[in-house]
Amino acid sequence: MTRTLSPAETHLVARTGWLRAAVLGANDGIVSTASLIVGVAAAATGPTEVLVAGIAGLVAGAMSMAAGEYVSVSSQADTEAADLRRETVELAQQPEVELAELAAIYVARGVDPALAREVAVQMSAKDALGTHLRDELGMSDLSAARPVQAALTSAATFSVGAALPLVMVVVSTPALLPWTVSAASLVFLAVLGALGAWAGGAPVARATVRVTFWGALAMALTAGIGALVGTAI
Image 1: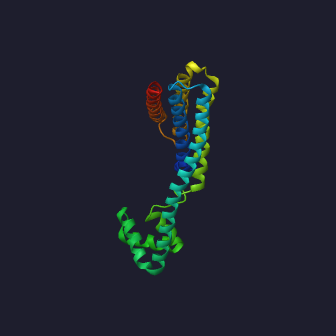
Image 2: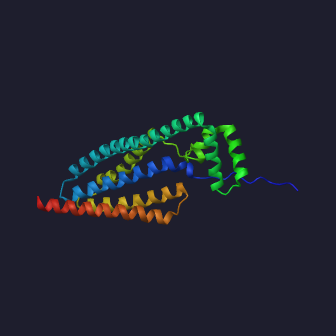
Image 3: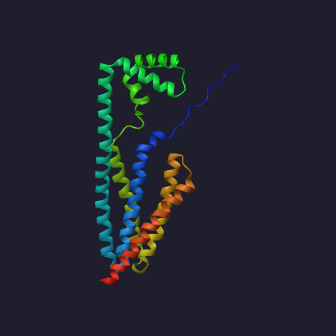
C-alpha cells in the first residue's frame, strides 16, 4: 500500500515580527491623525489649517514610530546578543554543566532521564550553541529582533494609515469634516483589524471590534477636548 505524504504545515508565527509593527503603525497612523484632525476641526479651525495640522502629524508620527521601533527593538537585539555571548562562554568553560542543564530541561518536559541525557549529547554534538539558545533561552530565527525591519515597517504603515484621514479632509465639505473623517476612519480601522487578523490567522470579528472600539474612543475624546478648547478661546 502506497503511503502519501501529508502536505507541509503552514505556520504563521514567522509573520509576528513584521505583522506587529505593520498593524501598530497603520493603527497609530489612522487613530492619531484622525483624532488630530477631528480635534482641530472641532475647535472651529478652517480646512486649510486642519490639513496642515494633519500633514504635520503624519510626518512627525512616521518619524516617531520609526525611531521608537528602532530603539526598542535594538534593545531587544542587544539583550539577545549579550545572552549569545554569555552562553558561548559557558559552553566553552563548563560543557558538562551545560550538558546537564540541557538534559534537565528535557526531563522537565517529560523525557526519561537516561533518554534526556542521550538527546542532550546528540543535540550538543550537532549544534550546542543553537540548541541552548533555542531550548534554554527560547531564542530562534523566527523571534530574532530586527530593528531596521521594524522601523521601516512602522514608518511606512503609519504614513499609509495617516494618509487615509487626510484624503477625507480634501474630499469633505468643511461643515461635515469632523463627521466624514470620523466615519471613514472607523471604516479604515475595521478593515485594518480584519486584515491584521486574517494575516495572523486570528479571529477576524474580535480583532475588528477591538481596533474599531479603541479608535472611536480616541477620536471622541479628542473631539471633545477640541470643542472645549475652541469654545474657551
